[in-house]
Image (cartoon, rainbow, N blue to C red):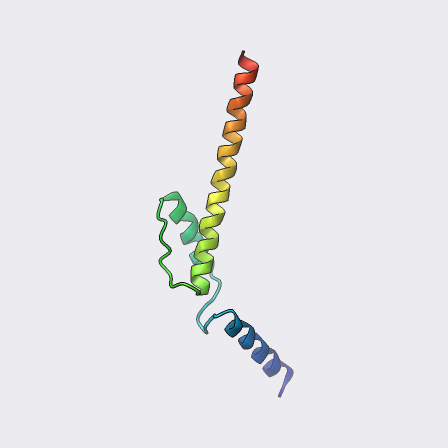
Length: 87
């Protein structure tokens, strides 16, 4: 066996251990779909469970959630500061 063949076998085994198939690729498309789904309030993941596409969609969705959470926290802190200094 060549070293590239051995490395390929290790990679295949790692993917199988995580329940990933041949076509499960981490694509930015799914990440972006999940990110925009949060903004459009679409809470259902369109991909099959335990696939890389599903995980990437969920990662994008979660990322959008935390971006929005930071925006809300900053806005609330600003409002609180205005109340304190106004009166």
